[in-house]
Image 1 (cartoon, helix red, strand yellow):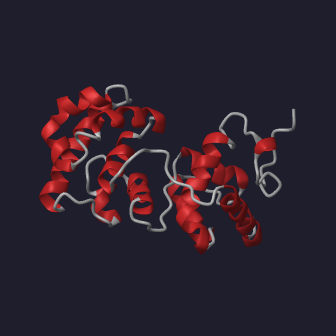
Image 2 (cartoon, rainbow, N blue to C red; image 1 turned 90 degrees about the vertical axis):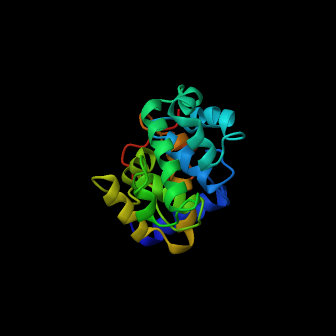
Length: 212
């Protein structure tokens, strides 16, 4: 895919959704960090249902740390892998309090040093909470990047590096959100909704879904 076609794709995505954002609900960078940590192998909807029950009362590192693993588990047991996530969340809260004054760090290295926080989670927090032009590649973005031809790659890191290289600078801040929403609702895994897609004529996927 050439640069002109990539630019046209992001121009259309922006025109259709000028101010995209995460579907996770949060009020602070810390709450976003916890929500993203909980969202691994879970839907944003399921995470929001859980966090609505405890963020209003336990929405700070100290409050969640004081809640403890068992206490937090009670709130998130409807989410997959909840015991591991509770353990990581409590450990993360304690590290934030001990080493960062209770604040979420704004570097990838410091974020990835937190329990349960990998590269994708760090990228989401850096981009969404702090406005850094990072690219968090999940299964949706990996699929869309390969299927459309925007940034094909054999693994998520390769796709991430290609997106950072190929996405025009003025679209980089919001590109993650546009691509994940496209993958979540239109360019779905089993049967992409090509007739409903606003970039179908620019996409290089060879097996587009025909009109019904």
